[in-house]
Image (cartoon, rainbow, N blue to C red; front, side, top):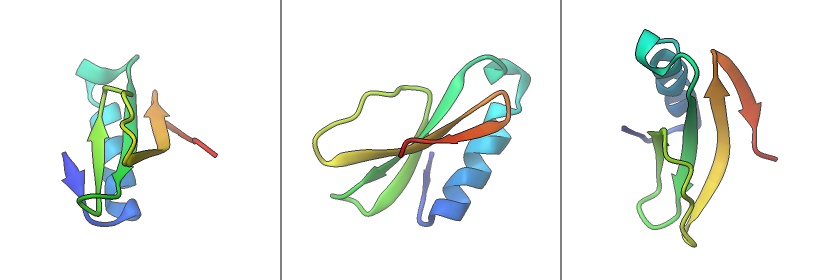
Amino acid sequence: MKAKSIDEAKSLAKEKNLEAQYKDNAIYIIYCNRTKYFYIDTDSLIRLWERLIGYYENGVYTAAE
């Protein structure tokens, strides 16, 4: 999933994390400098042009910084 703003990304990640399928999985919010979008995914792999913003786990947000 991708979002244009950090608020939209946080909202999407929280909704996804509260689904029963992702209950004990972390949902990562990653910003891509190339595309200027925020991506929401369960994969925490970060490439050189990306930056981890934070993640949701069991409905609780944790900032990366």
